[in-house]
Length: 133
Picture (tube, rainbow, N blue to C red):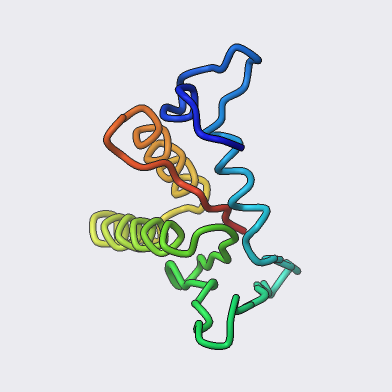
């Protein structure tokens, strides 16, 4: 895709009815390495493919421990994944400090969605190009 006047903002529709920033985010996740999660009654397994673009580049960590009961695997831009996993870790620590119990996963997902929505509406914030498992 070539850059035009419709791809600078996530809330600007092109005449063809497309949101280019959303398409860029989906393409970044598609081009990221594969991430998969398996769950049983007592265990969870997260796996990612670490691929280096060249011999000189190093592998980047793509699986993060958020809390004792939450872990995430990322696909897309690893920098965005690291920032958001740090945010989730901070939210878990704050919740356990205030309520002396672990943060429910559903509540963390809602907080993460709220943060993504605020970043989406704030024109100064960059868009998030990452997917979580």
